[in-house]
Amino acid sequence: MASSLSSKPFLGSSRTEGFSGLTSLSTDLSKLSFSAVKISVGSRNAKKLQIKAAGSTFGNYFRVTTYGESHGGGVGCVIDGCPPRRPISEADLQVELDRRRPGQSRITTPRKETDTCRILSGVTNGVTTGTPIHVFVPNTDQRGHDYSEMSIAYRPSHADATYDMKYGIRAVEGGGRSSARETIGRVAAGAVAKKILKELAGTEVLAYVSQVYKVVLPEGVVDHETLSMEQIESNIVRCPDPEYAEKMIAAIDAVRVRGESIGGVVTCIVKNCPPGLGSPVFDKLEAEFAKAVLSLPASKGFEIGSGFGGTFLTGSEHNDPFYLDENGRIRTVTNRSGGIQGGISNGEVISMRVAFKPTATIGKKQNTVTRDKKEVELIARGRHDPCVVPRAVPMVEAMVALVLMDQLMAQHGQCNLFPINPDLQSPIEPKVGVSKTTV
Image (cartoon, rainbow, N blue to C red; front, side, top):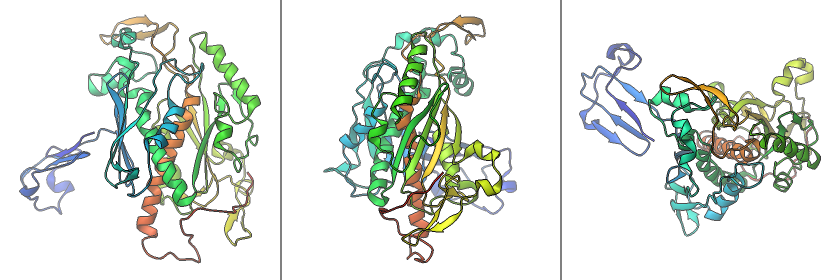
């Protein structure tokens, strides 16, 4: 990723309009660069400023940059800001990557990749050093010839056309950066975040499939207080309820054999989230979650707590009454807020839902246009998921964990740097004996 600041017009402003307080810029800073940002400053008479951002880096304190393309040599990530002296191994990352990898069942893409990761830097003798962690995963099952038609014609509802509109060029094979293989770096980084969150605060991030097409898991069937990874991973669709899991699998099988695709919903919860994470106004915790999960391929909608359903309630019906539990902690009787109030976590279970559209690349004839603006019909080839939601589960978990890790470091840096107010604040530590709330 390369961002740059060079002397060109910034939003059409003159030097005196936007920067009247800056009377001079030292020529000693004529070239300042590092891996994430490149800044070039001209003479004090420079009239123009220009900023370019590539959009491949996420986070402020726990920063993750992903790289690579679907049919290139490999994909991966660089994690910067990871706390030092934390035990991390390739095996820790591989568990999560195996949940994400293609070819794991008949309802996922048949592409065969082991997605075996290598940690190339930032870890010594099994512990983090505090320096950037580089994770690399090679691509081994590329079939670039499957995309010959897509080099000419745009796939409907895919990123082919918009990448051309933005860059004037694109990586045709597999969709390049728009491919879900980009998420390997996110899941690897999320594995690091999940392990640290669990160790530091007892925080657990769990996601599961709650809807496939028209098969909807009824609210309340899954007990979020007792939900476990074992329940989620007990079947290939990752729905913790066996009865509805079979219905979802059947729905995917029905479209898979017809070259069609369907969408669905992933529900994600956070247990034992420390209270106080998130900031007022622009950096509310739910806003950070929304940006994170809506950056995932094929994501189209986001709800937290009662979501859109809360619009059917009155204030007295929707409010979550407070009470004191047996340990003197402030809790809520219900949790329609979804564990967040005023943009800040309140210590209850955080619950959110992410909607994913049907996979854009399908094996049916569709009307489209070519790069040279001719109307044609296209039957897309290649290997694609008939429904993305089973493999989206670890992706959602990873993005939520990255948000929480970033917010936890921000909270410690601002509000826990000095002794806390014990009458109002809680120390960040693993939680035990937390009683249930109702929804």
